Amino acid sequence: MTSAANLQEILPGLWVCLVEAHGHQHRSILMLGENFAVVWDSLYHPSAIKALDSLLAGRRYILVYSHGDWDHVWGTAGFRQKPLAVVAHEQCLSRFGGDIPQALAQKQAEDPGYWGAVALVPPNVTFRSRLSLHLGGVTLELHHLPGHTSDSIIGWIPEWGVFLGGDAIEAPLPVVYEAELVLGWLAALKGWAGRSDLAHAIPSHGPARDRACLDSTVAYLSALTGDRVFALPPQLDGFYHETHQKNLEWAAGAAARDG
Image 1 (tube, rainbow, N blue to C red):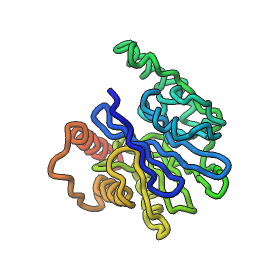
Image 2 (tube, helix red, strand yellow; image 1 turned 60 degrees about the vertical axis):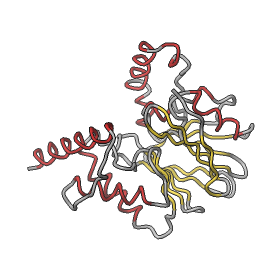
Image 3 (cartoon, rainbow, N blue to C red; image 1 turned 180 degrees about the vertical axis):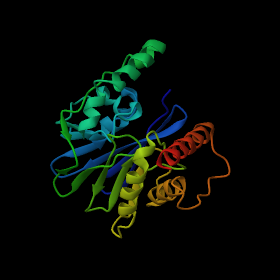
Image 4 (cartoon, rainbow, N blue to C red; image 1 turned 90 degrees about the vertical axis):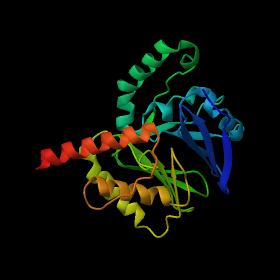
């Protein structure tokens, strides 16, 4: 179920781990500071983070969950060395008492041989609005940005001009679960997109070229709220075609309630 991981150092000290599995690209990030490292998301299975674990090479590190969905937090047990802390939004911790173990139990019932390797590791450091991690020579700012999920966060590396989007940005289009979060989600992304010092926007899924994914997500959400027209790619795979139709249903339902 897991293909070989593609490791790429896109900036000095900033590594991307890209794995293709379950029909999609999944991306984790490694930041190397002078004193600590940070791993952004542990992917979907302990086997998926082996290359990233080797790259850590015994460094002290902090693990950050962008949100609690299965493909971002189920790989933690694969690290040979435990993180100094597991950081996430406070609502992510709440999910570890609800939908996260429920989803895992269902998967383990379907395929115990594969999913039995997953052991959940909840966050032990949480925040509500903003938290800064000082790694030595570089900083990772964590900001709550509810939209894709209510516990979603983004990361900002001011020294490098890098925006870590998690699932708050995605190409060809993001996944909407709660229509009432869309306007706040869009407003927050517009604020980030307006920054002249933001040079790179890295999503968890889809292509990561400069800041294109951030700009296209803003355009899509703007179209979803009726502010503009968004040109979808001529061919969408089954997942994104279905997602777009559901997003339209969410938007129509929200418009009907507001009207």
